[in-house]
Image (tube, rainbow, N blue to C red; front, side, top):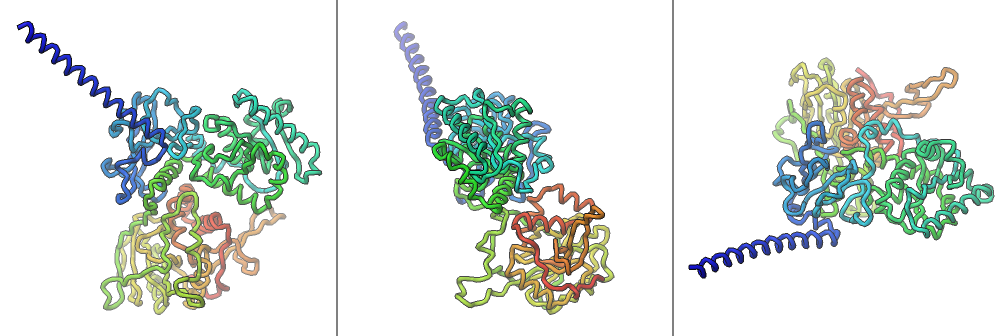
Length: 626
């Protein structure tokens, strides 16, 4: 009896020890798996299961506490998000240390696979088990950053991001008080080795030499702030830095050995760009991963990299930059900090695009604006629209936020497939008319386009929400006419990328304008050879009246032009996406409120993207306003 009881106890102990060993082995396997994944630094290690090439790239954002981050269906016009966790590729969590343990996240799993932790506030995460999740934050402890896996984000300030466009220093004029400046970082901030400090001392000595012999270098005035400079005594450090940057063309910034762990360095680089200065980064090597969104932002087009071994070449190096080069670098830097690095939405959009690209998913396209068809007038004996295939079709929603211009390969007027000397294949355009209470002239306006070749469709946007469409006013002119509504009376409807628009060329015209068809065809031909520019008829010119101290704005055609009004203009549909989804919402709100200025907004937008002026197609004597 005693022996049998003893055997039972031994059996229970054996089972208990076996369970403990199994648990330990399981934890060991999980820990080893996570360790291996972390060592490999491969983005596939974080997204091994749910992200399949055959599926659609989607993100699921964890709900936040009231008043926290929320995202709609679209982000900058692209359909990134899903509310179904079973259809997602990546789970996005905006870090809040109050959660206590990330394993509380509903879909965390064993070790955080398929998770992206957005720590934009740079909260302390040292005590958290992060598993194999990708981390997004502005600085990492020494040795913790995993290139190609984690993401270095810019310093984020929610209050600052909402009004950054008001706070940035103008980049013009290009010539400033100081051709070159240097703002040193205190030794306490750097915490660097003696070798690094020696390099810094040598740099200071060299800059002093340049400062004392500016004419010999043919460089211009040089300002330096080395440890023995009196500059710190005249101004607070932060104010001093911004003041110096705002008056400098180039500014030298020393890159710490572990830049991703150095908050001062990151802030200096961004502060220089905020104030329109071009950073000259002096380091032991050119490491793009030391800068925010390292594999997305084209930092080589924004900063100048110099090795410590080549610091004597700094003057000759910056002299090679022409005014056009300087302007382009300043503009690239300004666009990056304003559009990509200052908003929570844009930072997340950039990172999702990076992950999408690293995983080799098809690029995410802009979503077309759904049109509510109120009425469709098909030509006689035509029940449905004929198919139309756009020549040299452009997936014009595939552009990243970093590049808003139309891809160069789609702007060519020649088609290599047709052979030398052959014409571009037949191409059509869409006539887009936004109408509001113009019933008395609407039929006449539409009828003028009868017999006009190369028209795919006429899209009539019915802005009058208070009356129904009078079908008798929509004549049969041999072209399909789509009358659509958007539920809102706004001039922004003129530039919505409606899904009924199948062509790249869109001719936007007012609902009271009469034009000669020959002039329209001429403008269409001009546009085909200048596909990234605005081509139109009515033009405006502005000049500064020094005596009256005011702007003159008129339509004097002998004076040239500043813009073309969008009341009779050819545009590429690509710009409709940028206007509606990417351009600052404050501009669209202003247009809606004032019921005006949409032509100013579109002209400035296209000029900003292309750095090209609009084209006036012909002398507009044929334009008649009803």
